[in-house]
Length: 255
Length: 255
Image (tube, rainbow over all chains, first blue to last red; front, top):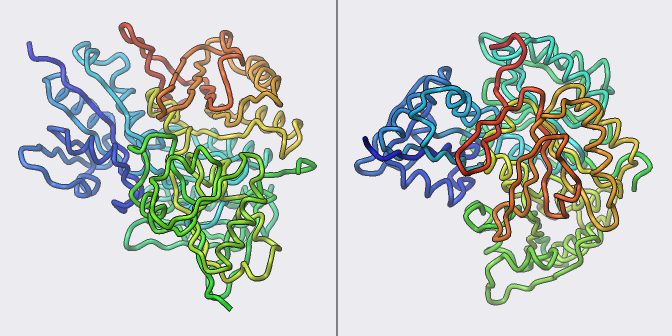
């Protein structure tokens, strides 16, 4: 029987190596096997004798099971994930597979290396839109009913959280973002700042700051993070540049 | 008239240099002046000719104004912040000061360098508790009314978000966390997983996983992040170690 290996779920951050933590770089370097979606694997430096197992972007739990199998065979496996692995990414899929899964997986040492998630990168590029209380939601109704998304979004809008929408749109989910923006328009005012942050930290980065009444789902694609401001979120105009967006830390009578 | 300088708000991450991004390290190295709370400044490597301006932890807007003044004089200023500067930290304070502030500040180039925020570090150490939709709230009622906090917390609990509580307790705010946990107990079940993540990434790191009916505010201090699971958050027991905590990505009928 071979000694149990290890599995680390590694967050690569949003794209640039400048946002990859030393701990994550180290975890990639020490792994005997890298498992993940092809474009993420391409971001890890090549190492001699390191095996790469590229997969499609959709089969998270199967990919996790494959990684756990490798680790159970004594390999040291890094499952790579964009952004932070714990935020709408691979970490939950690994624990879903582990929970009630193959008993040989129980001896594997499993760790998670955090990364800069898209919401934090988008916020940093925009100013400080997350200065107040905020929430993050996946707009994908592949894994939860659309009614749950509507309920949560309504609650977050009424409670005046800044809202980050992950997975806003895809060819298979073309209308959900439009509905979400329409719902937001029934609760927040028309001039509420909205940020479309596309491919932050990558060469094709594009950030747009607009208002809720001018926000259209066509401005987003699969690699866009959409952020809807709270009632207190403000713009600071700049010459020849998009405005800064920030949410003050104080609220109501609380300054 | 001197040329305008620059100001970058730098996220140091939760503590260890292993979680400091190369971009943040670079920003610290290039600055002529470092501004921030003393213990954060101590985490930046000393550089010849670099000036350090340590301040108390409470005077965020005054500290931001001082940093903006230095930048307006042509200095290249790094305002240092623990975790991510955009999450309950210094970035919002800088934009609050800028907004309607001294007109000489308008020419300053202001940027933000993201960091690993405490919530992501705590989640990584625990498993994948943020696998579903989540929100982050500051429990401090210094800057917003307690009624707002109660409303938001109630909304987040009813909408079944995983909830991260920043600034849960301090000597000046001893009872708020107890009230928040009590409120959570009226909406979520007694066996809901709760994580107390203290000083993650620092030598005195301590993480406790408990349940809502056993969660007591005495388990938290100023450097603790408290995370309350959703109804779907689960534990995976381990031998001789605290259990993994994770929230599946699927919800309701949505698998």
